[in-house]
Image (cartoon, rainbow, N blue to C red; front, side, top):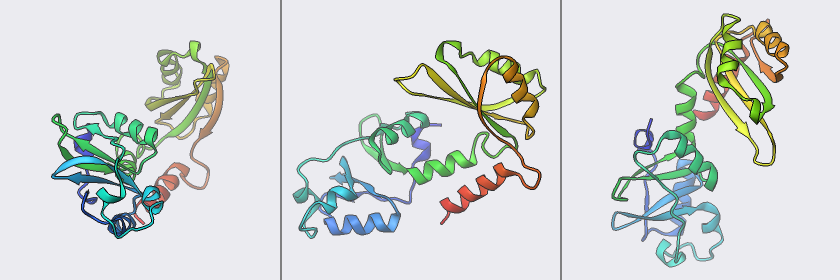
Length: 220
C-alpha cells in the first residue's frame, strides 16, 4: 500500500494568508496538532499547535507569524511503512503527501493510519500473540516458522523491535491459534525466550476485546 492510497479527504490544508487563530480552530475541529500550509497551491511547510501558541498576535497571518516552516513529507509512491516511520521520526500527527513534481496531493493522519492498520492484515484474524527475545545473531525467521508449523500452526504476521545499544531483539508473532501453550513449550525446548504471550482466556476472547476497545476509541 502506497502513501497515495492513505490520503484522507477529512483534513484540509491551510493557506499562508490564514491567521494563527484559524489554524488553532481547525486543529481543534479536526483533532490534530499539525496542519500543512500551502502558498499558491504549493506546499510550504507543516505548522504545529505548539509553534502557534508560542506566538503572541494570533490575528496575524501565518506568513507573518513564521519566516520558515519544517517540510516533512513523503512522495505518493512511498510505502505505508515509510509513512509511519516518517511520522514517528518527526513526532507529527499529520503528514503531507506530494507527487513526483513535489505538488501537494493531500495528507494522512495518525488516526487514519491506525484505522487502516486495525482493519487490515492479520490484526482482525482470530489468534494469539507471542513475543520472543533473542540475540540479533541468532535470529532466523525460517527457524521460528518451522517451530510454529511443527505444532500445526501458522504465523499470520511478525515484526521486530530493536534498540541500537542492545544486542537483543524482540520478535512479535501473530499466530492463528488462541491456545499457545504447545507453541510456547516448543520455543522453550529450543532455548528461545518467550517474553510475553497474549491468548484467549476461559471467559472471553481478549484479543477481540482489545480490538473492539481500540476501534471504539478511534471512532470517538
